[in-house]
Image 1: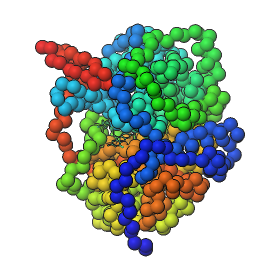
Image 2 (image 1 turned 180 degrees about the horizontal axis):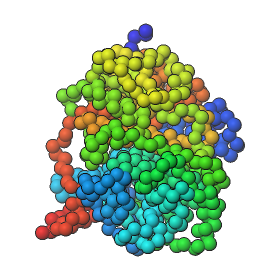
Image 3 (image 1 turned 90 degrees about the vertical axis):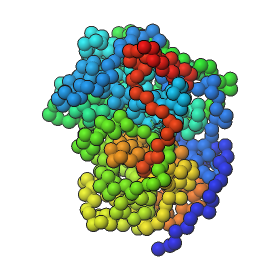
Image 4 (image 1 turned 60 degrees about the horizontal axis):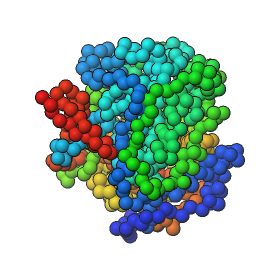
Length: 631
Ligand SMILES: Cc1cc2nc3c(=O)[nH]c(=O)nc-3n(C[C@H](O)[C@H](O)[C@H](O)COP(=O)(O)O)c2cc1C
C-alpha cells in the first residue's frame, strides 16, 4: 500500500470569497448525474447544484460570509404570533412514570411531548444573569431555524374543533392560528394522532453564516425530525408521513396560515408535514383519504375563507441598513420548491416513508436521559478514554436502524443510495485507527466500490474477535488502517480541534445521482441531520458526547473517502472537480464523538424555571433572557 501522506498545509487563512463555479460545467454535470429530467427540472436542479458547489469551503476560499456581524439585526430564535390566542402547555414529565404505552393524547401528554421533541433543555449563562436557552435539538450556531406547527384534534383545554397551532417554545405555549379539517387528524384507516408541520426561517442562519446557511438550515430541520422521533419513542407513538398533498409548498403554506413575508420581515418557509400516530393499530401503512389531493385541499380552503389569527412578531429589532443578499441560495431554495402538480396524490397506496424507529429498543431507559441531557461537545477531554467497543457498535446499529428519514415528496427520491458514513476512528476500543465506511443500505456497496480508489475490506469482527452483528443491509468497510487520521479529521473540519481529539469523527455523504426532483437536495440534508441526531443521542447514552459540524472542507472530506491514502490535492478551490465521476457523492455533514471536558465557567439552569411561580422572565434581544426570583 502507498504510504500515508500527511497534509502539506497545516494552517491557512480562509479568505472571504465564494469558490468559482462554472454554469456550463454544472449544466453538464446535472445532465450526466441525473439524465431524463424535463428541461424545467433540469434548470432547477442546476440552481441547487450551483448553490452546493458555490457554498463549499476550501483551504484558500470559503463560502461567502456576511462580513462583520451586525448585532443590531440579530434575529431572535423565538417567533410569536402576536394577537393569536395562547394556551399554556404543561411541561411536567411526571406522567411518563405512570402512563402505559402508548401514552394517551391529552394536553398534559402533548405538553410533555413537545418538551422532549422541540422544547428547551437548559438555560446557560456565564454571569448568572444573562442567559440563553438550549433546545433538545442542536442547531448550527444555536440559531434555531426550525419552527413547529401542530394540527390537533379537539382536546380538553384546546379549541373545540381541529385546529392549527404554532408552538412557541420560549413560553411553552400554543398559539391558535386557524381551524383545520378533521381529515388531518384521523387517517383513512382510523388511526388517530396529530400533524406536526416544520417550517424554516433560514434568515436566522444567514445572518451569521451567509451563503452556507441553507445547508445548515435543512440539517437543523433533520435534527428536529430526529428529536420528534426520539420523543415519539418515549411515548410509544410513531412518526409517519403526513398527507402527500402537503408536500406542495403552496398547500402547506395555506394549511398553516403562513403569510408570504416581505423583504423587511421574511416569512417562514413551509417544509414538511409529519403525522404523529398516537393510537395503536395493526398496520404500519399510513393511508390518507383519497380525496385529500392538493387540488381538493386548496379548493376547501378557498371556499371556507379561513383567516389565520395573529401576525408574526418581528424577528429582529431592526433591518440591517445594507442587508447582504444571497441570490444563489435564494435560487436553490426556490428551485427546490415542490409545485402543486408535483406533490403526491393519494391514488397510489402510500406506505410510510419513515421506518419504525428502533431507538427505544436500542437505547432503552437511557433514551429519556439522553434527550434531556444532550449537549454539543465544546472541547474534548484531554484524558480521552477509548470509546468502549459495545458502545461504538451500538452507535453503528442506531445509525443503521433508528434514523427517521422523511421523504420530500413522492417525486423527490433519487435512485442512488441515501446517506452513508465515512468514519475516522481515533480511539475506539478493539478497532484500529483509520478510515472506515458504514454503508447503511443494501446496494450502497457497489456505488462505494465504484467511487473509492482503494479496495474496501469488509469488517466482520472487531480486533477482540467479537462479531459486529450489524443489522441486515448495513456493513462496515475498512478503507485505510492502521493510520492516524486525527489531523486529517481536524483540518477537514475547518481546523476544529473537536474533530481530531475524540473517539471518532464521521463525514456523512450522499449520492447526487439519479435525482428526479431538486427537492432531493433538501431530503438528503434532512436525512443527514436526522442521522446526526441519533449519533448525538447514542453517544450521550454511552456517557460520551457529540457535536455536529456544518463547517468542513467539502472536497477534502470527499478526498478522504475517494482516495484514502492520498487526499492532499483536494484542499484548494482550484482542485474543485465538476466531473460526474468525482462528484457523484458529496459530503453533507460532519459529526464528532468523544468524551467532553466540562467548562466550569458555564452555568446551567432548569429549562422551565422561568415559567415557574416565584420567578419572572425578561426577554432580551437575540434570544437572550433574564430570569429573576421574585419570592
Ligand atoms: C447543522 C449544525 C452545524 C453545526 N456546526 C457546528 C460547527 O461547525 N462547530 C461547532 O463547534 N458546533 C457546531 N454545531 C453545534 C451547535 O453550535 C450547537 O448545537 C448549538 O450551539 C447549541 O448547543 P447544544 O447542541 O449544546 O444545545 C452545529 C450544529 C448543527 C445542528
